[in-house]
Length: 262
Ligand SMILES: O=C(O)CCC(=O)C(=O)O
Image (cartoon, rainbow, N blue to C red; front, side, top):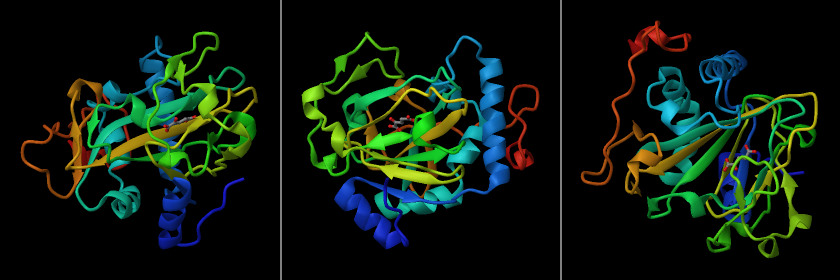
């Protein structure tokens, strides 16, 4: 089981040592209920997508999604890790349905990402309680100092990413479960080795990954993600940011405060 840091500075110290940190009870329950309803709405709108695969391109025209990842309570955490000029480059709901939710094989995020330099932090927001039995995220503390390895395809297991870090690089006996109540957040480093088990329980496990970069980091393949400037200043010539989507009740998920997005 992971240790929860009591203060922001302790969380930062834990991040430097272990490559991750936990922030309990960051978002209020009414907003988490909206995020849960948003997942149900996305699933209904995208019946051809598995609920573990609701991601990047859907964000570009989704005012609620952009509102959620721009929440000041999240950005205040992010600012401690990457400074005051913050952009989103990608976001992904990984919703593991009861009994059938797929695993995420051991991997290092940075090995998948077209970012220069690899300065980026992930916030993982629990939309459901995330527990060992429903496939919570697992990390191997300290592996943020392992260089990025080449990943290999694994088509023997149905999984969210279909690839993994070769097994000789993973000491699973050192893994810790990131148990989070809904509304809580974990933060992790792009090099840390992490993954999650299949959900074989009757409880859904939904989480939102949110990838934040400082505006000095370039997304070299913009089609890969959803670039939005969320706080502070852009650096000229680095990224082209999208305009925030305007809310249209005929096409978008309805949410509290949507009138400010019209
Ligand atoms: O949600 C999960 O189970 C895994 C998330 C993950 O791999 C990530 O956020 O990088």
